[in-house]
Each structure stands twice: as structure tokens, then as C-alpha cells.
Image (cartoon, rainbow, N blue to C red; front, side, top):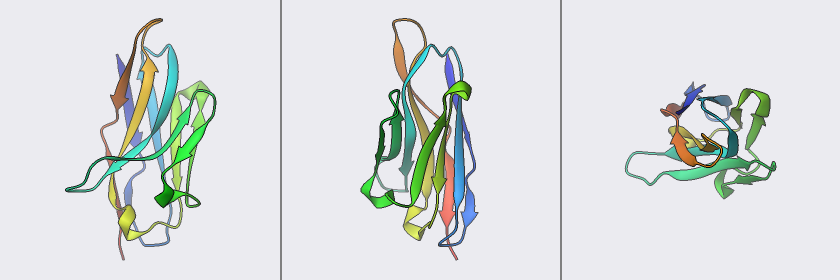
Length: 120
């Protein structure tokens, strides 16, 4: 009922920047929260940043001061601006949304993942 489509990944050198985008579409009644997670091979998926309906934002300690999450509520879109990228930021990044798809029901949705590689 809801789809998350993300884009913006790629290959960058250490110290470079990327901006990820995630657009939600479908039966969206209300967004509880949206955010970004990342997962490297052999590791657990971890939270990177989230923004909730009230505008509250949380960041992983590892990205504070370097990454910025933002949203366009009218477009049901969330962004992740990644600056000062480090090799350890290399991961598949997944968009996440907790979204009401009807008046009374919500689900957690995931984007397809986009690869971010930071390497010289």
C-alpha cells in the first residue's frame, strides 16, 4: 500500500558528500516517522537518523555533525545530506517509514536500499 523509493547513492572519495532521497507514495494517511538505516556486510542494520511527525530528530553518534536529515512533508520525502564521508560510512542505506496507510492502521516500510561507497 505504501512504497518507499530511494536514490542518491554512489561512489565518493573520503571527505566527499552525497545526498540521499526517499519518496513515499501510495496510501499515505499520516507519517509517524521516517528515517535512514544502514547495513554493511556481516553487520546488523543500524539507525542513522530519523525525523518524527513533530519534527524531532535523532542521529547516530557516529554521524552527528556530518549528516543532516530533512523532510519535505508536502512531498512525503525525506533526505539525508551526508558530508565529510568516511570509509566506514560505506554501507547499503535503507529508507524507513512508519506510516499510517489508513485511518487506523500503520506499518513499517522499507526502501529498496542504495549503495554508498566511500573509497579513494
